[in-house]
Image (cartoon, rainbow, N blue to C red):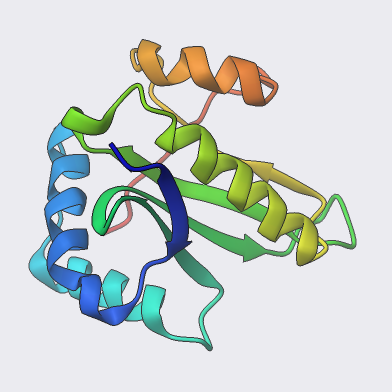
Length: 149
């Protein structure tokens, strides 16, 4: 088995990304309209957007992704980096892809001058949380939200 590598997800990987994206949505029992998926993909590929997509590859196969973005904060002069989505295909779990993706987001965020990297996960996502507890601090915040549309 070849080693995992991390690289930017490029336009020719749309079909592979689509498969993982739908797996991610299924994992969280969520759905979004096709238009949202298309706009998300366009934003991830647009160099003028502050959104980025990294992939973990087993050989040439995309087996995991991380989407991250930069935004301003009222708490620091430097931007924050939000790791919005992280997903590994079921058959590739436990091989280190998520850890490598997080480490690469850390590296790129530091390179961009970010003050912190943060993310959310569901409290029932125990397998991922076991990794997250090793690579970051659980700050103890609870998310509240109100859908507006």
